[in-house]
Image (cartoon, rainbow, N blue to C red; front, side, top):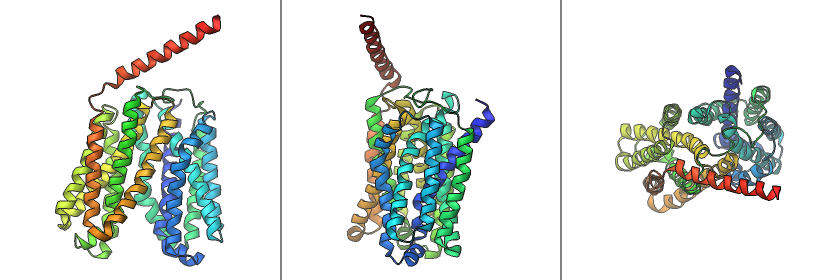
Length: 405
C-alpha cells in the first residue's frame, strides 16, 4: 500500500476516535444548556453519558462477533455513516426520549468502531510499528478532551448546544469520506494484525483486569478533580479550566512519548505507565495541598493514564488469544467498566470521607493493578504463543488427515 495513502487513512482513523470521544463527553460541558432547552433536569442530561457508557460495555463483544466477516473498510465506513446520522438526529431531537435513543445508537457504533479501529490501523504499516500506530489512533481521543470538548462547549454556550452537535456531525462526514476512500478493503481474518502476535490467554485476562483497575483508579481521582483543586489545593474556581487544560496537554504528550518506546517492550511499558499513575496519585494525596505540586501531579497522572490507554491497544495486538478485534472489544468493554466503577466508588466515598479520599482510592486501585500487571512481566509470551501455534497446527493436520480418510 502507498505510504502516503496509509498515513492519510491513519489520520482518518485517529479523527474517528477524536469524534467519538468528543460526542461521548460533550453533554458534560453542555449540561445546563441542554437541560434548559429540553426542559429536563441536569441529572437526566447526565444520564445521556451514563447510558452511553453502558451501551458500549454491553454491545462491544456481541456486535464485534456479529460483524466478524465484514471487510474493515466497509464496516468502518458504515459505522461512521451511522455516527453521522445518529449525531444529526441528536441535533433535531425535540424530546428527551428521542435524544436518548439517538445517543444509544451512537454508542452502539462507538462500541464496534473502537474494537475494529485498532487492528485496522495496525494493518496499514509493518508489524514493527504496531505500538506507534495504535498510539497515534488513541491520540485522537486525548486531543478530543483537550480541544474537541472545550471547543464544542464554547460553541454550544454561544450558538446553542444543537450547533455543537451539528458541527460534530459535519466533521464526521469529512472523516467518513477520508476513511471510505483511503482505507484498504482488508478481510477481517487476514493480515498480520488479525490475530495476536504471541497469543497468551493468561496474559490477556491479566490485561483485562489491569484495564478495569487502572481506569477505575484514574476516574476515581479525576471525577471530582475540580472539587479537589479548590478545596484541597486552594485554587479559585476560575483556575479549574486552566488546570484541566494543563492535564489535557500532558495527556497528549504522554501518548506521543509512549509511541516512541512501546514497540520495544510493550509489557514493561505497560507496567511503567501503571506505576507512574500510582506514584502521581499517591503524591497528590500527600502533597495536594501545595498548589504547584498539585498541578504538576495532576498533569503527571493525566500523562500516565493517556499513555496507559495507548499501550493497552498495542499489547492487545500482542497477546490476543484469538481474533484481535474480539480481544480489543473485550478490553474496550473493560475500560468502560472501569470508568463506571471508578466514578461510582468515588461518589460513594465522597460524602463520608471527603474529596481527599477519592485520590487515595485511585492510588490504592493503582497499587492492586500494579501487582497484577507485574505478574505478567516474567512470563515468556513468545514461547507460550509458540505452544499455542503448535497445538493449532496439530489440530489442522489431524483435520487434513481425517478429510483424506
